[in-house]
Image 1 (cartoon, rainbow, N blue to C red):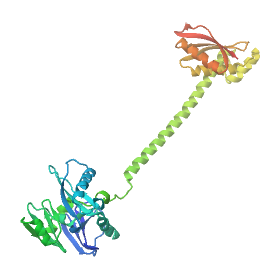
Image 2 (cartoon, rainbow, N blue to C red):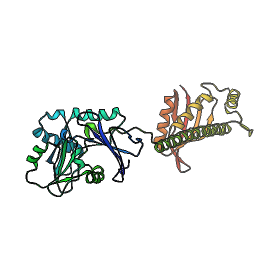
Image 3 (cartoon, rainbow, N blue to C red):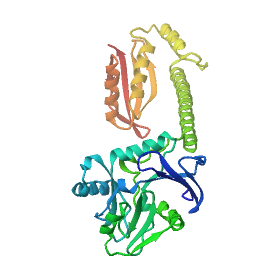
Image 4 (spheres, one colour):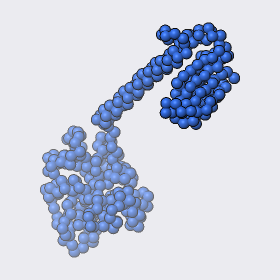
Length: 369
């Protein structure tokens, strides 16, 4: 939103709109009475509403420096309760910007119903102001004394730290002997650029702050879509990698089964179907019991579940027992293997551990329970 292109709307003291000014780069370029000839309300036009000064009480409060806006508003509300003629719960309290090294802050008090009425009147005409400024604060502050501008029924007064709009007789009591500079339309309009760019107090805050229009951030949406697509592709890649890993593991298991079968089958012929060829060999040997495949499955399952244990030899005897030679990193690994095979429902005899090939080696005999 550009502060160089401003639509200033003057609200009437009773109802409606008194008139408007169009400012560009601080200079008035168009004007109108009421809402006649109002320019198109297109961005980046900034809309500022000027509200009657006699409806707003402007005070100076000493607030600690460094307060957050919400803290400053809460502190000002407590102080306003001591000077407000109406219950502070019925008032809208707006705090002006602080000046470095100065604890005094301008604080505006206006009935909340009046504030709601002003905004309602404007919004009914399709106008949603970005700022709401009391009319006396549209005057630039003088270095000393007061500056007066006669606009409408009541003149506007602005001092160094004061701003009000009251009847001239009452104003004389407030001003006292202080010098008063009366300005005309040209001087008033010449100072609007500064007073609008940095309002001493903007009533559009707190409960009456302008709500931001919700808009789609297309750049952020595109980034989110790219991240989502990346996550989806990564998930798909993980699934594909898992499929290949399981496939390779199955191939390795089949190769291991063929290697084990080749060690117990007679002759040098190829092993194409380990389970069928072992069953055939078992039948030739008249083996019984649980059968080679059942015992071998229990043994191999136990070996796979026991870390750092590998099979080096396997023999199935005529009594239906499976004798295996295994190597491990420690003798404790053989005890763990024995427990796992027994948990599968088989009897296991573990021979004493000996050294073979630089690693502990043991003989196992597995048979059906």
